[in-house]
Image (cartoon, rainbow, N blue to C red; front, side, top):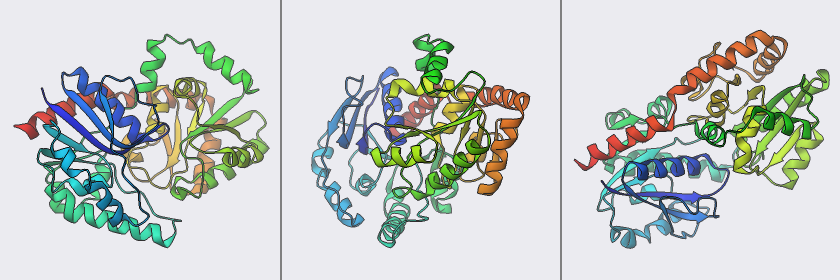
Length: 373
């Protein structure tokens, strides 16, 4: 068995990569490995786990090359750690790939769209993409991408050393089953929000602030939700995720229920209570919430972008749209067609079965063995 070290910018509540590292680390420990996660920022969300979390407080800089230089100050310490293989998961630690003494694997979650970003941010992301693909990833022992879409964004020369390992998405379903939580718990939560038994609930889970990550499409989604509920009194909408009081206020003013910083233990209840999961995101390397909802038998509506065509089956488990206007039309189609909605939900639960953590961890276990051999 191996000593495995993850290198990541943060381990915080509300971030998809952080959740993925947590599930991978626990899964690899269960396989017999010793796992340590080295992170710049932690908030206690992932304390008391089977793996260790070690802080490496790295001073952040708005200029990305300086941020990388700050990360490299930990190089000597990291090279003295008893680690057999590194799983380098995020910027700015990819810059350590050429200098780590132990075997190092780059985990590529993709670089998001910079649509709507300020010029400085766009330049930083251009630098990030170029440096990762031309300076750092070529020095990795292996590259793992979270979807075929993300792999396709790599230069052809790097695709030969890259493999796709889909991330798992059944964690909330596991929690629901492990706790034997009854369906009535979701019904009670719906009633607490004044959602009747015959009402339909549309949900979105993710970042809530349209300025911070404009590609998430929350501004468009708010407009769609607001219009649909205005003309369909039996339809309720909720937006769940990372945000602040101003985000909650803006969402509520649009006639949408805000749920800011929802506790982890509430996520299974939210998915179980939902009737249709909706996202207007313009870029996704995978899209965890969309697949999480599918595990609960919920049909999805999303744009036909990024990895969406891989993680859903268009027309069978979700409806994918080429435009925001078509997205709104697809939501209305499912609202008006109960039999189709139920059938798609059943198909979604079946299709999602290919994205189980058991399979993901097994593939990482095999990959680590191959790298070390």
